[in-house]
Image 1 (tube, one colour):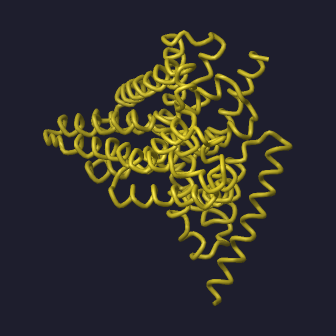
Image 2 (tube, rainbow, N blue to C red; image 1 turned 180 degrees about the horizontal axis):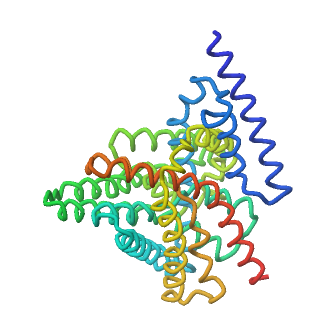
Image 3 (cartoon, rainbow, N blue to C red; image 1 turned 45 degrees about the horizontal axis):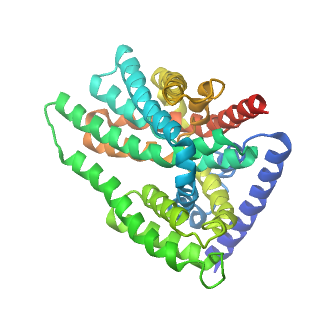
Length: 389
């Protein structure tokens, strides 16, 4: 019972701390995500180490659940109406950001003296974006317009491009080392294709069946059932739960014409999950990696920001997006988190000789982008809003 009492007390205090961070963020315009991460740093192992093990043990399950909810909501941005309006910008900007980021970060780190395989892998890791932090920054900003719709759409699909780029980088790096294995491409194909198939298998019946018990509105229990089922099956099938959730959400949003707003109940319930997720994410950060990342980590940060700005501008130009929007696409897509760390872990297993470098740089810079990224997203949204009036 002692462990249970510790867990319940910790959860109660974390929810109250999250409420305080939410209020502070609303009054000061500081990103809520950054405040929650900082709170986690304070109470977790990097700081006062106040959290019981039973609370930190919840992190993995909470992260998967929270991110699957985010993926469902982002999938709602991929309606045919939205794609007709912004599809060209979404595809162009997302592709250009991934391509330019990978090219610039890889070549820059290689010119600084890193071995070509390690530089290529870090360039691919740099393509990942944190959908949860980006989505929350958009919600906190209150910005509602073409630019925010495009950012939601880009975040919904750019991890698919990033996973493909990473898989190609792994194969290319193995070729440089003389150990080419095409199995990584097949694995990536299954992770992406299998996730889309799973999203379709869940989204198609959900689009028809949900929202029937209470006319026009899917019940909270229906929404949670779909989210948990998607996340669990994705893990079991070893496919991306982010892409599966996004695909299911997009199908429901497009086909469930009897819904007033597909799965808007998820929006109401996701914040408690995200709140705990961000706090526990901060508590699990290893701040010692910041110093260990050193000059390579600093170069990675600078190159990633510069390349995302350049890629966003180029993609916006190709899509004939408003000139005032083009410089801010990449800035709005700065947050980076768990997907990048997952890529680094896979790369470390495939390239044990570079494992320490890959993990140190990725984890160290992820801390920076998690704390700095939401602020940059808010700044980009405010500048676009100021221009659009």
